[in-house]
Amino acid sequence: GAGVSQSPSNKVTEKGKDVELRCDPISGHTALYWYRQSLGQGLEFLIYFQGNSAPDKSGLPSDRFSAERTGGSVSTLTIQRTQQEDSAVYLCASSLLASYNEQFFGPGTRLTVL
Amino acid sequence: AQKVTQAQTEISVVEKEDVTLDCVYETRDTTYYLFWYKQPPSGELVFLIRRNSFDEQNEISGRYSWNFQKSTSSFNFTITASQVVDSAVYFCALSVTNTGNQFYFGTGTSLTVIP
Image (cartoon, rainbow over all chains, first blue to last red; front, side, top):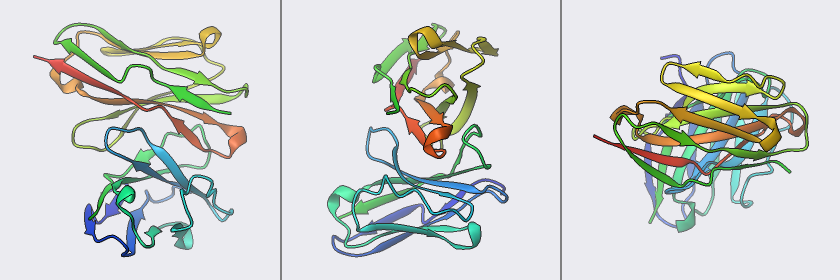
């Protein structure tokens, strides 16, 4: 399909383990965003990539969280030494260049840390 | 600082009633964009509308309408003759070009339409 895809759709892990979440944006979209949505909460901004510019990491909650975007396309969000409070749905979105362009969201990855 | 407030956490209406979802935003920038997104029970957010700060004309799309008022920093969303399929969480968002394209989302309003 032509939409944003994320994998896995569900991830259950044990506390202390590392996890990697993947996002495939829409082809041609230069901007990519990661958000976290906890149960019943709004969207918490995590990180933003725009082309080859340095990412905006201002939303990452701790140094256990990191993300990269290879070749301006696929992005991976890594959470090291997961904690129970990391349990949430992680959403990826992509958009064309500028902030006035709407974001297209993926279906999310539901992360459960036991 | 930028902020979006959706004071209504949950709303329930009976089918065919009209319902308005409130959104109040804060920004000192003069150029900004406002958005509404719908998140149905399936979970995937769907874009509904975008408005820029220089266009205060209200917009209507079918049963949906939006009222943008800069004087009150509000961008409210009205659903006319609600239907069960309108049941979802609705998010209002603000984007300000000077902050490097970051989007600021409200906490969402959960709408339940009762048949």
